[in-house]
Length: 129
Image (cartoon, rainbow, N blue to C red; front, side):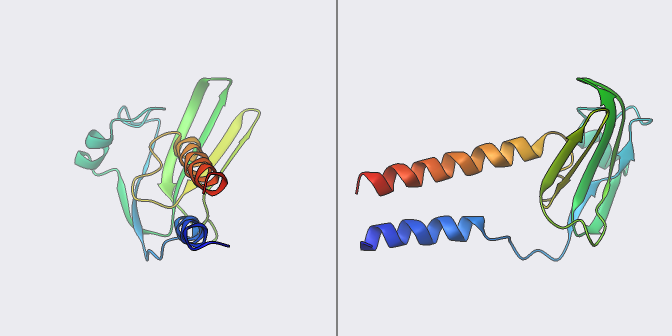
């Protein structure tokens, strides 16, 4: 393997490693609050004190049918909820994320898209070096 290919592989592996963060801040509210709907106003949530600190992860749980949500709950993750994931079953969904205030919306899709973009870029570099 050539030097540049090794460097690219090292960069990709570094990006994929989980970061060592002791705790993060999360939104903590339910859709019973006006500022905690499906797409919340993050500034209002912070101003109104709907924040949990010292969390190992953030969680967003939602109930609904299709794109119509009947309830949304944002909370601090439990000690066993420490890796990014998103499960969506008919009528119920739960997303776990590991960056500060990541439980505001659809962050898993954004993270996955970014990962695909980075991997595509390095694949391109690998093939043309």
